[in-house]
Image (cartoon, rainbow, N blue to C red; front, side, top):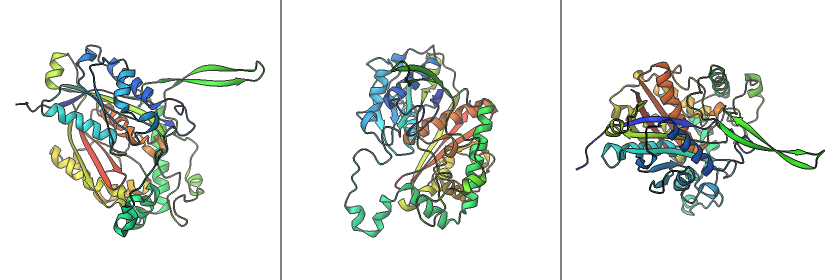
Length: 398
């Protein structure tokens, strides 16, 4: 019979996040980007034989086009992992990366594996948010109670703002804080341990020589952070989802490109391969809510994840609450009474970006390294999820 084990995070790494559709990573294929972060995370554990990795589980929210065809297996092969290492792609929209981590941890806990890679990759530059060939079931529109399934994310944010009475002013102030915190963290070098620089090739026209030159550029900072934003600038932006709404491009997450990966191991593997853990994955929860208010999902996932971890929220020293929209972030913070000082201390998706299925793996790297850097005991990653879900995972520093 399998023996129950603990699941430890041994390495966690991510790419810098590029802006979509014309940012630094816009021409970088998501499978190639996944391969790069897999290579990077393996390089952090030189004592490990890559052949010991038993699976690669990858989250991707829109697994079509260049990130289709089981991008997990393709990325694993492109990374140079042995052919014996399989791969599987999972999709829970914005929680895909976190779900990949939870699935890897579960396999280790029940003794079915000892070393796995959990990751996420997404190119919103190359695959649009609604996919390449969107097709809704006619049943969605046949009955009024199903229509919320088809609501765009912005409309759900407007609905949350209306029901929870989140003002435009509060949303803009939250967005400004996200940029200010992210900028301060960048300037202090706080992202250094979690980000793997990416060499990006630029093609520039040389009109005098009638040719195109190639220049290599080292991309090592999330490029969505704006030092020049202000409350006045944010207030000038028009609502983009409802004529008399309050949700704007400035208080919403950015469309982005990026990838992240974590190496997860059992205690047995730590001893066998001489690995030093960074954190333990304690618990995971996912809950459903009405699709038209999908942003409130973390309100229900967070208490369940804490209960399973045997913790209360006051014990959390760090919370990465994915800022899909300022409106839903504020609604969750207020409903649960979360300490705003520990929520996104280095900014969130409004400033840093949100590459959908990759975000869970990316922000998990942030949590793990923040716990180590600041000597905090417990951290959480949580997000709302399209079609009405919320997810949360709890981490413990070791």
